[in-house]
Every structure is written in C-alpha cells, then in structure tokens.
Length: 326
Ligand code: PMV
Picture 1 (spheres, rainbow, N blue to C red):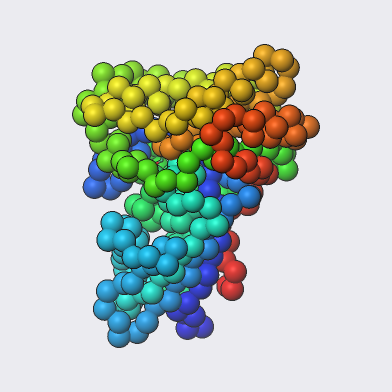
Picture 2 (tube, helix red, strand yellow):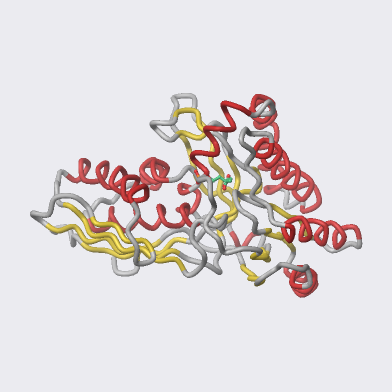
C-alpha cells in the first residue's frame, strides 16, 4: 500500500515526578538522567504532517506562527524518518496546542510526540514505540514519555541510547493533577539553553547527577507500590532539587512567580491537614498538584484562592500519542 503522505496525531503533555535536567550529549540531545512521568488528558497538541512530492524544505507552523528554532528541530526529526522511509519530500507541518505554549506546561513534549507519530504514519512506517522515541527525543528530551499513557519511565541505557516505556497504566492508579496557571508568558530561557548553562555553572549540578539514580529507583518502587505518601515526599524533593540547580545557575534561572510559591505553601498546608496532595513544577511558573481523586475539590479551591493564580485546570491521567486518521 502506498504511504498516505498525510496524517494527524494527538499527544498529551506529561509532567515528570522524578525530573530530568541536563544533557549527556548536546548534539544528540541525550538526557543526562532518566525520569518518571505522568501523561495528562486535559490538554493536547494536535499535529498534521503532509509530505509533498517535489517539495524541498519543510514549512512548520506552531499555533499559526513560524519559528526558526522549532523548525530546525522539527526538520531534524523528519530527516530521520525520511531516511528510514527512503523519501526526500519536504513536509508541511501544522501544530496547535489547546494550552499556553512554551510556558512550563510541557508543550514541546506533546508537540514532538504528536509530530513523530503523525510523520511516521504519513510515511507508512510502522515503527516500534522505542524507535519512535529515539526520533522524538531529538526534538525534546521529555517527548518520548508522551508517547505513552499513564506512568512512563525513561532510563539511560548502557549503549548510550534511552529506553522508554510504560511503568503503570492510568487505570491502575488514577491520580489527578490540578494545574495552577500563574502566567501564560513564554519563558525567556529555553530548557535546552538553561540545561547547558546549569551544567557549566551550577555548583550543585554534579550532586544532582550523583543523587539521581537513587531517586529514580525509589520513584519506580513508590509507583509500583502505589505508595502516595512516599511518592509525595520524593517528587517534591526531586522538583526542588532541580529548581535549586536552576536557581544556582549563572545567570540564575528563576522560573517562579510569587503565586508559584503561594501555591507550594497552599499544597503543603493541605497535606499537613491530611489531604493527599503534592506539588511539582517544571521550567516555568505553573504548579502541578498531584492528588487522589477525592481531594480534587479541596485542592482546586485552595489553589484558586492563591493571589496571582489566573486559572486552575483539573486533569486526569491520559493516553499515549495516537493518530486521528490512520
Ligand atoms: O523536554 P525538554 O528537553 O525541554 O526538558 C524539560 C525538562 C523538565 O520539564 C524541566 C523536567 C522534566 O523531566 O520534564
């Protein structure tokens, strides 16, 4: 059957509970550490890829706009897939997010997971997810995790590649994530540039790497054992350790808003009062509060009451990336 040359895919952002920050290899975009995440269902990236015979070069539009940096990363992923399929056609890529892009809501993870899923289908390539993950991580280090639903685990392999796969299905532990949006502004320093600066200048970077393997192993155990209390302590520690590295980078990477800190304190107060909830924050000012389903109304109310919180979004755990028209 000839390749359809066009396909559209959906992928959801994911939030790391054991974070990654830093690269082992900049050119290959290999993460310095593994990571453990949950994929969300409330937000999505939708990406359409159309390969055009005779076209040279790719046209890439994200939320209707062209951006040279994004286009280069998209073309790098498409080049790998084109080589694999033995075609040279340029592509027209249209991607949109139903949430703020580049604001610490993991839009690059969902965007690149949707891109490689759609592009492989358009080229008629039936690749194992592990192979698709290798293409996706060229675009964004956290994108391979969005290929999977529920809880996903990414580990560095001894041969230098990454291994990524499902750790636990969403239905097996249907936690909720309440997201407090404190700013929709685009971040000033990209994760990629920030990571390179942290490696060069943060005095804590070495300790971050050194202590990471034990955190990841503990995270796997706590998820497999559905141990909310232990996961809460570990995830908050991993998040704050990553932000300590960011803040001690020169110049400092301070992604927080006053409301970010307000949300952390609100989550801590809830937990002290017995509500099963913990926080995590990525390279941006939004706070993600992970909780058991019964806690959602109390968590929503507490976060919405923090001065500076613009909007609160409640999400379940979502599926991996999929094609709409394959
Ligand atoms: O996907 P990247 O390479 O832009 O990295 C994002 C890293 C964090 O979101 C800050 C942490 C993580 O593990 O997702």
